[in-house]
Amino acid sequence: MLLDIQPMLSRSALSPTMHHPALFVMVHDVAFHDILLVFFVFLHLLLPPLPAPFLFFRNFEYCLASQNKSLTTTPGETMLFLSVLLAAIVGNSKIVYGLRLWNSGTCPYAQRTWIALEEVGADYEMQKVDLQNKSEEFIAKYSEANPGGRAKVPVLEVEHAMTLTESVPCTEYVFEKFAPASFQSVEQKAQARLAVEIHPFNYFQLLRVRNDPEALADAVSSFGASMQHFNSFLLTCSPEGPYLFGDTFGFADACIAPFAQRCLITLRFFIDIELFEVCTLRNAHRTKAYIEAILDRPSVKATAPDSDVLLESTKTMLLRFDDTKETKR
Image (cartoon, rainbow, N blue to C red; front, side, top):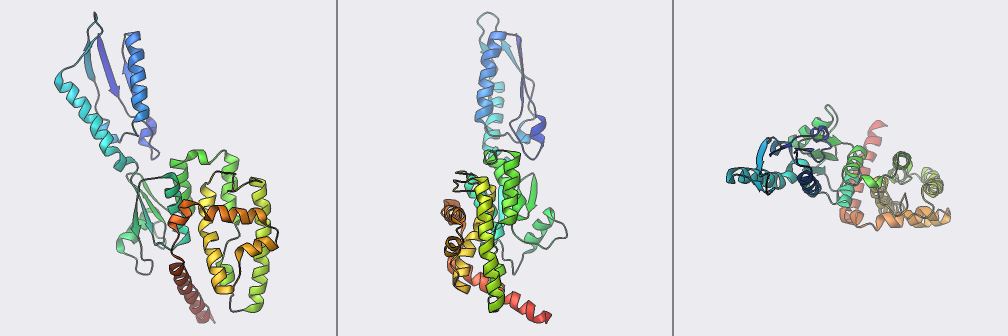
């Protein structure tokens, strides 16, 4: 009996979100078909997505003896089939999951995507960027994602697929690709995006008026009120917490954590404001617990810049802001 096995590309395998290729098996012996189907389904689930270059082999013809149901092949056929499978397995990780993050090491926006990559356990390469002396390679890479834009971090390269920039789409992509279960519903995804927009940890709004006592007092008052408002929002998402949606650390938490981290350190150093005290005074207990939980996350700790480096970076940024303000006068 003739058994014709044709590995072919499924439609989804041609898209950036590559999935397992479809395996089409044509056979006329029902009992053997059942066994063969179980084998290929098992193999199909074990193997990672196969890269396209290794899938253009087809029309393997095997002679199945009708009497004893044994499967016979020539040595050449066997070696060819095994070599293609081995090449697909060995070459797969670089082609399908090749990721490179362009990151300055101190930018809170780039840290969002860095946290996401750590959370999902992705295999990625880090490319350090000096934002004060941008290389031509970095500028060119950024232009692939946003032609004509001012080059900044993060930039996320997805090998053989696309280049992304801006922290929210980069971070959301990582979670969607590698941890889709972190979003439980469309409604939850919308709430997560809203949380990223309305979180109150914009520390620079306070730091930029640090030398104006009246403006600073107003800013601190508004900051305390925003903690209360965010507390109410968190309670609608998950009364118990500790993260935005219960015990699942996801996209919004990764986006908010770098700003809460910097808020805690910079407000204490530059204007003598204790973040947790503000939460306590405003009865924002859910917000306080939320900050503690996200800052204690291993991925957040692992990607955090050293406090001294962070403070020096913030000082430089404030000096540039002050110089710009003086120039405008």
